[in-house]
Length: 251
Image (cartoon, rainbow, N blue to C red):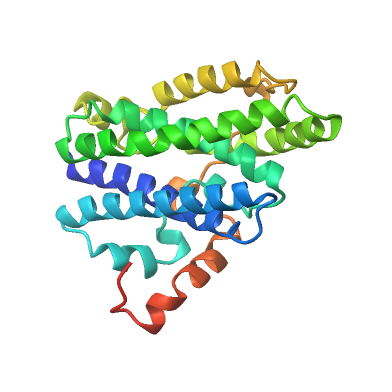
């Protein structure tokens, strides 16, 4: 089994969870409703915890301690999709990102429960339970606001069209894609994207929203190979501030 291929897969998953976890945590104290303030804070905590579990597996494969890889790398060393690092914007964008991202994430972990790499398969079984609540939350609000007032539908539609090119970047293929598939570690980004598209289409069809034709949408790629937007490094600087003051602090 190609260890480099497994590490690349683990890094992009862990970095996605860590970065979006911190973005979601920025809603703490600023949610449009107390219920949503608490919900986004709770989901942020789950994502950071899941990133820690993935970094721990990486540590068992010879990588540095979870705190070190989380808080001492610069933007070019991160493998998260650009989608996760974008600023929160208004609530409609954060909700659409939550819906598109978490739908992909629960399907990724579902597929990984059958991974030939046992530590990842075992973690996937544990994580699925948390992600079911995340997708239930996202689906409920997208259905409700996507069929409510004219303003809510227009705002969500605009955010959906803005988010889709970035969301497609989640499925940027690994340089080891075929090796991961052949070795049974992961069934691949193409299969994941097909499952994701089927699921989000079904949810959106229950609303007044319209899913743009993905054949006309150009994916925003580069995050998986360290090419990020101008938004990531400032986020990393803020995220690592406590660690840089006291590297002995625990999560």
